[in-house]
Length: 467
Image (cartoon, rainbow, N blue to C red; front, side, top):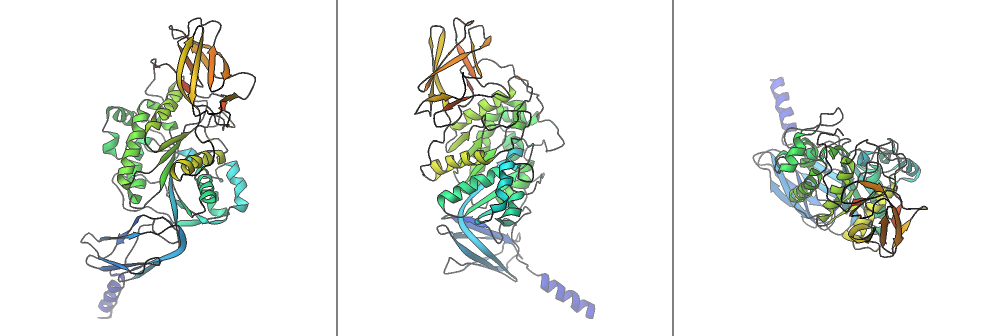
């Protein structure tokens, strides 16, 4: 009899324990002035009451027959701290909550890299890192065969310890936003070194288009990341799509050099799909892959070309890093502060309407043949171009025979005159169009010119290049 009573007591104590996904916990930052979903699990038919300290009245709901429940709250303008209390058979209290701007930081290793992983300017930040208005949520690596409901992790305040293991690019991006906007910033690090973009998409989407299907089927098997489409979406993206965000910063592409032309379609598919899942037309700012001595002929250059083309996505922007590489033999540049700052300048200008100065790299617009020379014009160089050095580096020019020769260049305002003595009738120019260029052409505002080519000749790409 005593054993029966004991088991009955235990079953009552476990009855209807209301629980929440890990993304909803104390210390989190919530997106301001948006519809916020609070969701979780409990017993079917259990009454759940949610009270937010910024609201005068609680909201109640009844748990569904699948043991899931959710309510929707409206968040106010940036501020805090606040609390949220969830009452069912048990009581949960989320404390030290802030409301501000929440950004998702995603991609592969250059987004994942931390102070502990060798990022030198992030290491220099550690002694003075404490900022209670910046919060981190790191999503652990998890691949799954089906969409998951939860991820592990917890929200933490930015300090010397937590920054040490958080995305350096994400931190510098968030720090600049927090300083300029003077609102709390929440950063979610959802990255996996060496990951293919194909794996961050639902499998049905990755296999939907001929280009993306070709890319997905050609992903090489590597020991550091999965090569099955959809598995990172299932394990890391799907569980947080109910959590409102302001936008996404993205640093990825090195792994997708195996099919550079497909990267353009993949990027469109990723942005469209994620925006649909979050039900928000959020901004998407990304980093063009940095120079590195891969040893290929055109795969890397073509990947950068696809990334440049993808700027036709509405509310997107790309930063260039050709001037931010300290070692061409290291795929992981050791400095990330300027990367984060350049991404932040896009967000501050385009998303938040702040005037922070020039933020777009000069981009090739058109060409004009003038005798034995070609004149190039550029967008986003209002004060003209400049050369850091005696002569313009990384220029090539070709005639109709498609044989490129090293070229000379002369800056005239926001145009560039290009020629080579052995090319009498030029028809095409390429700039920094290789795996590890060291270009020195900038806007007078100090932003590097985007690598480009004026031709559309077949590059003879090998679709089986290993990352």
